[in-house]
Image (cartoon, rainbow, N blue to C red; front, side, top):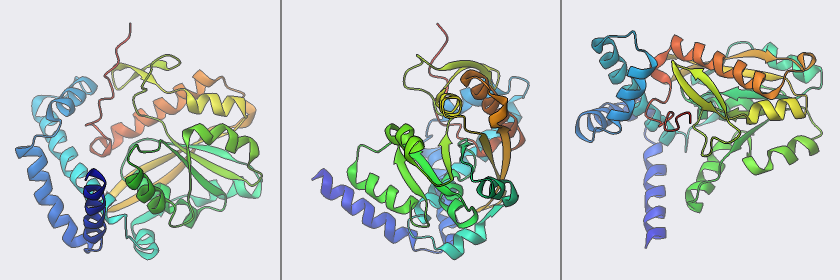
Length: 288
């Protein structure tokens, strides 16, 4: 019975995705009212996260940010649904890579790199569209979903325009065996399931455990690290800018690399606060 319900939901979402985006944004406006005022989805989590992250903001500033975030979250959900059927033409219209020449240089030098991202803006659209802009092979590491039907749908959607998706457990093997220049995309700002091995940093005015995977991979395989900065330019439109954070000759330790990309993420969050995922329980772990 559960499998049948999942299949019905998938068919409904795919059907919904064929609705033009301008109409879907009308649905998003209604959805915002529902999740913010009626369901009050994770309102306490968002309020706590914003208040702790910006202690100098007054009540009115926090409330304004909170509402802006939920409006963005509603749009993000709708855009994720649209992603099931969005065309290459539509995606190219809505995504801009502002300095492709930075990525291109790695291709000309026949070099690979790790590309770090945060949960800023529509990171799914940015990742999916990357092969349409970049010359290196583009690979994204992901955590497989327990629901096999949705996992299959997500992989099929993500890889529609040339992106390759591999599970986190395959990353090390991929790096060792891949012969062509690649960009490995890692989204690194989620809360670790286990804080053993995490790096504790001051992040958004709070002691925060940060996954050290990017640093370990970059140090072990001597890979440069880039950061994909994502900005929302207007509703449904995003710009991606590459920043070189670590080059091979620096020979940094894993923790130093992790510290650098985390501090850079914090800087970018502060520039456009409402497009980061504030409903995530990022600070559920506390220092012992």
